[in-house]
Amino acid sequence: MTDDLEIFLRNSQNTFIKKLLIRYMVWNEGKHILSYIKEFITEKKRVKYLAISEFGPGVDNELFSSKDKFKFHNVVVRRYNDLYITPYNFITNNLQYSI
Image (cartoon, rainbow, N blue to C red):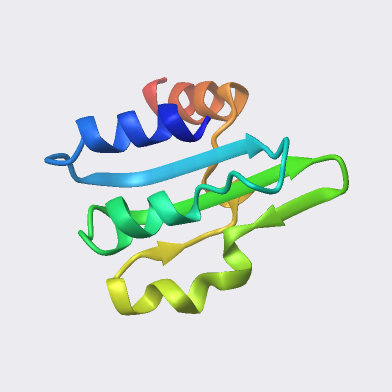
């Protein structure tokens, strides 16, 4: 996971991302993505809204609990479920306005 994320972040260095949602399963405690987030996103101010959720056996964390650390970099940290749009909600909201 971390290798794929690093490749994605390196390849999108010249792209501003309005909302970035990351949800991943923690398999071992040695691999965390926060170092990549700090290096590629917060220091370069490439994301406006950020939500990260990690889950796994005995793990259920969100970056939202550390939101104050990102204010300095003008990154708004939100809860994962606040930014996630289900396909049902997307279709329902878009059909509502097109009729």
